[in-house]
Amino acid sequence: MTLTFDFGEGESRIVTLGVAALRQTLSVMHRLQAEAGWPLDVRPSWIADPSATAVSGAAN
Image 1 (spheres, helix red, strand yellow):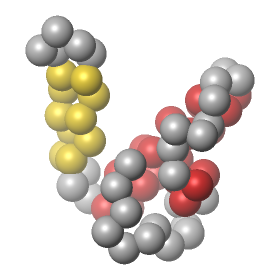
Image 2 (image 1 turned 60 degrees about the horizontal axis):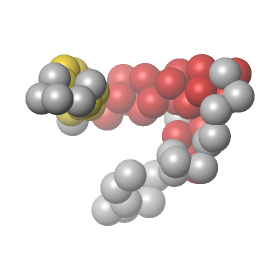
Image 3 (image 1 turned 60 degrees about the vertical axis):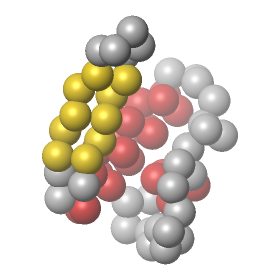
């Protein structure tokens, strides 16, 4: 799976990770976003719990 960071104006970086590593990375990013006090409603709820089962076919 790939995680793409879009920095605007054609600048992006792509990281390829296994499913477990990708979920862990998204979970860490979610935690940091929460600690910063930023809105969490832009991410699916399963990201908060890396051991939870994501909805099949869900994309956010």
